[in-house]
Length: 495
Image (cartoon, rainbow, N blue to C red; front, side, top):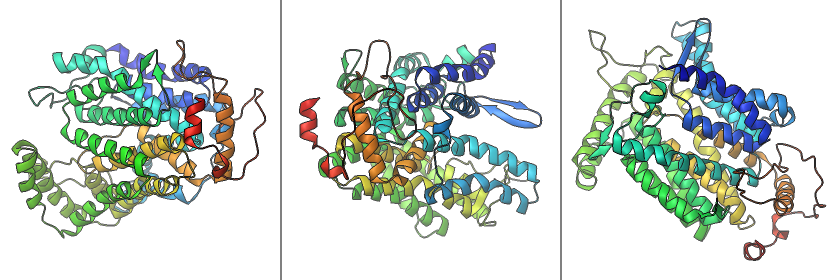
């Protein structure tokens, strides 16, 4: 590794302080999370006796320190609800899982810290700051900007091979660099598949920005042109699974906008539950799916699917030998031969979780990842909420669902996704009266502030549930429900 790795990892905390001071509230959080996801190296710095310092740790520690110093009221604003119980169980499950398998309490705490850095802390930060419709409009715009920032790097690596991580940080590129007659970009992500999913998420968010008109232009360029560039770049990432998820998610968002029908999104969210149930109980023989895939997507993709299912069968059999709490850590969930070599490759996150922390860990994780988006879709599909407001929230819900779907085949985690999940939980736990008050505040203040300037990607902060507003603003009109708010057609005429 080059010295730039230490500079980037340790320097990210003061950068977070500066950016959080510049963009207070959820805008500062979004900048730190998105920029850190795109540009920080995928590395882990190990220190004896203290938790490892990783990309997730750098982002979380930077935001927590900045929020504690500059916005402590917002950081302490969330109130725990029943929606938080599954993610709390998921973060704590490593301790009993390690203890029942003869491992030490310290081992359990170390794994608990890893779970907290990857999912718990980002979820909590999302609970604290992504608490309004305006915050979710900024969220989809921020992820969209994160995808646009990757375009030149993706095009370079698609032509020259994935070398940026090695040149800049001295970190070796992944093994699956060549795919579909060209190079699969990786940039500073762990793998090209992880980058492909990130570009899919960015394209979905850009599609939401375009369809719901949350922003019209960026530096004078129309959102539609930028979205087209991002879509082409996402295709050049050469990730077949991510492209399938992109087509499905964009179709669902478009269908929801036209019909306000939540059922298709709910059915997609139920698919991981059905799949995992069939795999664990061995109810259905998936060899037929491989035969169909060979005729539709090609022999190469069909062979990859059959390879994954064959390995899953071996790992599931091992996991069910300790079904409740799993085998703990240190690779005890793996299956090895007499020479100590793995005889099964662990690809899907769900089967890794089943083997490591059993059914308790698996159910708690996917209950949080799927129940919260489904409840949000059911609640905010009502026509009481304008699509300008609830559209971004629905798009983020669909994004979380496709992350759950990707976890059936891959095991890559990006810190922005649990941040979005925490925000969904906050909005879901917030009453209409509070959301309406925040909505009216943001609408009145947005009229006085430009959406995008040539100096900053976001306007100056304005009030939301997470933080207060110190300036003067017009008096907020009284209203008792979203039904009293002007309809979408009249809003578009005034904008």
